[in-house]
Structures are given as structure tokens and as C-alpha cells.
Length: 271
Image 1 (cartoon, rainbow, N blue to C red):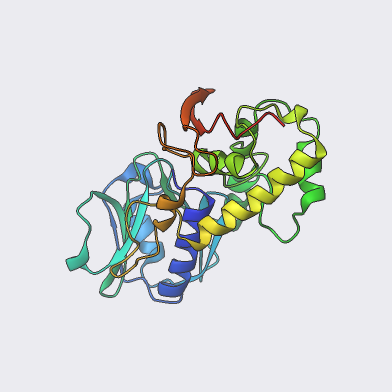
Image 2: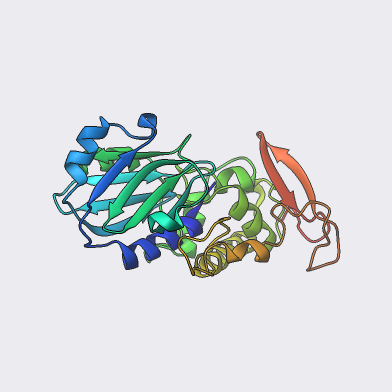
């Protein structure tokens, strides 16, 4: 599932390539991916412009020039591709938004969605999300405060969107590894030093993964060599049976609350 770094990478690319371009066409191949009739969506979008692209957690918010918003959540397996009809990816597309001869293809929206909303509706849809961990208002002290009184495993806390917005399975495991903490370790058992280490790991992993384009499997557009390049830099996620590059141990996989968890039992600890 696309997480903070993947969506931040998409936000930057979309801001560079589609902002202020007039929308010239809309194609809906799966009505369940949208929240209004296809004709209504097309009527609102054709002739409109996206004036700003915002990321909130794992969501993208397209600000339209008429004040409305498009709220995107790619969920599991969702992708974006921007290109000409000739560059159309060999995947089924659920929604397509055309900007002249270029098209923004929304792929894999079987569970995800693209909803046309008012400002108030958008705010309501995102109201329960926790704070952004790379926000300038976030610091080590506030991070520690957010952990106070919390129970359960580190992994479960990090992926809880009502506590922190944007982290999913991949980066929760990578953050725990960077902090040398077991993802199964109890949050309430963490020392102040461990919490400081965890916060430093959060900032390092999310920043580096965002700069490296996340781990998406497909480029955003022809010639894009950045998107997905972090996939080769993951230390533990999806690396079961491989050698830990830090200590030489063997990466293992287990489950917490039906979620896959990858870690090194040799150099990751409870505290």
C-alpha cells in the first residue's frame, strides 16, 4: 500500500506536471471508484484546473480552482501514471483525467477511491487522522507526549492512522529496524532514550524514502527513474531469510494483528 513517501513523491511530481493545466477530459471505467455520477464528475472537472496538490497522511488532495477538492486514497495496489495515449500502461485504469495530450491514469482503484468533495466534506473525511511526523510543528518532545499512555506493540502504534498519519507496514518495519527496536516491543516499556531513538528513526527513514521516491513498482511517467528507487534500500521489509546488513543475522517474518512484520532478531531489541 502506498504510504507517506510514495504519496509525497506523487505530490511533488503532480505539482510539477499538472498544476494549472486545464482539464480537457474525464473517463470513468469503474463507477465504484468515485462518489458521484460519471457525468457529474466530468461536468465539474472539464475546463477546471488543479491549483494545488496537498498530501495528508496517505491521501492526496487536489485543490480545484472552483474551491472543490478531489480526495484520493490509493489503498492497496493503487498507482498513478502520467503520459500520452501511446504511453498508456498495460494495466486496467479506473479513472483517467486528460490534460490535453497527456493523461493522468488512476490504476488499481479496486479498494481505493477518487472523491469529489467540498472543503467541509474533505475536512470531515480527514478529521480523524493523526499528526504528520515530518511537520515542522512536530519535535521529539511532542512525539514522546503522543506515546504517553499508549499500549501495544510499536508496529501497531506506528500504523495507527489516528495516532500518526502516513505510516504503513513497510515503513513501520524500517523505522523499528533503524531504531534497533523490535516492532513487537511494547510501547509502554520504552525508555526515554528508546523513544528519542525511535523519533530519530522516524525522521530519517521517512525523509530518505521520500527523497528516493518510495517503493512503488512503476514509474510515474516515461523517463522517471526516481519513483520506486527506495525499494532496493529497504533493510528488512519483504527481506525474509536474507542477511541483515547491520549484524549478519537473518531477517525473519512474523505477524502482529494479521499484519506482516519483518525484523532482525539479533540486533533489534525490546528497549
